[in-house]
Image 1 (cartoon, rainbow, N blue to C red):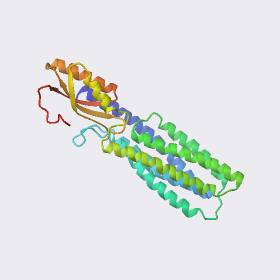
Image 2 (cartoon, rainbow, N blue to C red):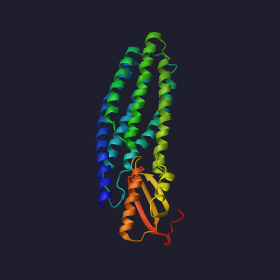
Image 3 (spheres, one colour):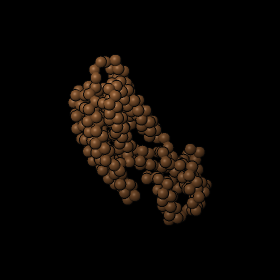
Image 4 (cartoon, rainbow, N blue to C red):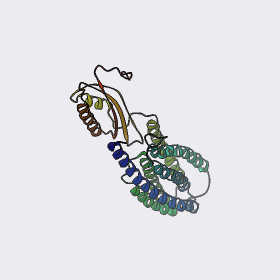
Length: 301
């Protein structure tokens, strides 16, 4: 393994190790709050609070899976995974979107089934649970601060959704307390379910794009091609492909056609190409050098 590749893997592993600690802290905080929520739902007789509790049970499963997968991603390359296990770090966020999508449909069905029930929610209790929920979720978001992998971004998105949900529940609790209008409670639950479902679809789309090796967001492939072809001694480029392991670590392969033949000159040019790609957001580059009269089977790819 080259020194450059070792540095890339070391930096990636260090980033993922810190991410694992962040996810563990968020998981423990969310688990503690979920227990309080379940008791609070029974105490307040609120479908909105119960919906939040059911959602947070899903979040606990998601954060636990994300924590485990982040630890798996720390493993280096081996005989089965030539790029290492880095892509496992994005599976938590992708699977989370599926869980939340299913959960939002279940929450919609549950809320609709309770709309005509005569039970009256306890507004002061709803407000107390909402304030506690806001505090606990802000603490969990703070624990994930600085994370860039899809796993961490997915977990942070769920917690931000929770913050918005509890903010809505707090406002709704205040409205019920002063107006005695009880249908506000199921209305909040419906709004939360629709909001969660919409965001789950966005995360699912992003994760599917990564798994299908779509061009990473923030990477302008045409700009990269132009920058490479503008370098001295570069005649053309072909077979250029770009993808990402986890939504953060970008990989690129490219063939460079050059008019220099000396090994030292080609090595210098290759280093210039690598530095150019690094400045454009590529963390791992595989570069093949070719002469102008060299026949390449991948020239038109």
